[in-house]
Image: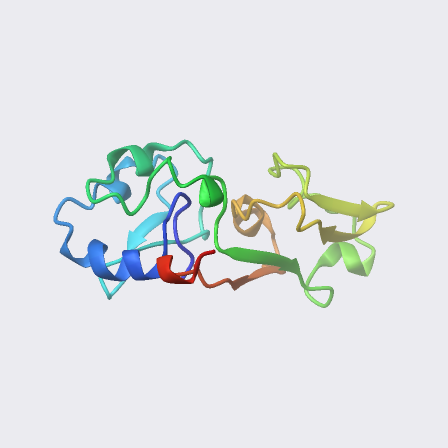
Length: 152
């Protein structure tokens, strides 16, 4: 699952979040992208919007799973985004910047007016590009969050 930013570890999500009664992370999200999965843990859905990294979910997390003190994950979402060259209309010669316009990190680069690619060095995986793409050509691969005992 794609987790909200500011998370400590996957094991922390699994151990602490299901017992959280408030689910304040969900109600604090102005973009309405945080939902509670079947296992009781928070996850992100980019169908309508993306993450603005406003910090609110971390500020209201009562159990500390999401915390602004998690420097290594503070502005990181556990996913890598890619543009499908088969589904993207720009790769077929249609002028389309729907994915680039909402990208505040300027992570979507074009070869001329066509052939967009995502610069993973700049991309924060905020997800705004997914909901804006008219052909749903942007997908992502979920990266595993490290467990506390695995971190060096």
